[in-house]
Length: 127
Ligand code: HEC
Image 1: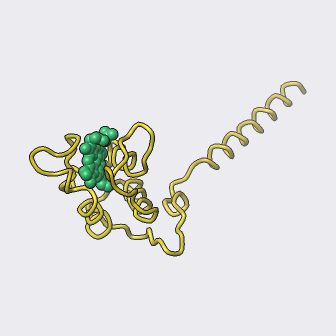
Image 2: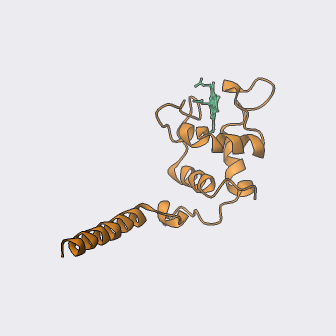
């Protein structure tokens, strides 16, 4: 009898743990970054959504032979590196521990930041 009760408790704990775990687990980008009606974050492309933002807001300081902060963002592989080490989102979202970017400029708008977040979340593809 005692044995049975313990097994039942283990089972319930197990189910609760699975339920808890699966409720925090997301693999759906749309769920993680819900779309607002005026911000289309589907089919984000490096060429049309990402590079133009960097080009317009960052490249002036982050290219050439002496890029600001020693961070160059002039091509895909450099932007990919910033995406992978966390500095791209950290700086544009003005997160603690990062220098807020664009330096001395306005924070990028929420939709642009969402697009960059989605691009980073799906692995920063080059297309
Ligand atoms: C007006 C020049 C300027 C612009 C524009 C600019 N940056 Fe910077 N950036 C700097 C300077 C200067 C630094 C060195 C750190 C500092 O002085 O804050 C820096 C540092 C950084 C770093 C390293 C930050 C760290 O905390 O390690 C990253 C990443 C970065 N910038 C990304 C960007 C991105 C992305 C954009 C565009 C959205 C951008 N920057 C626009 C001047 C600029």
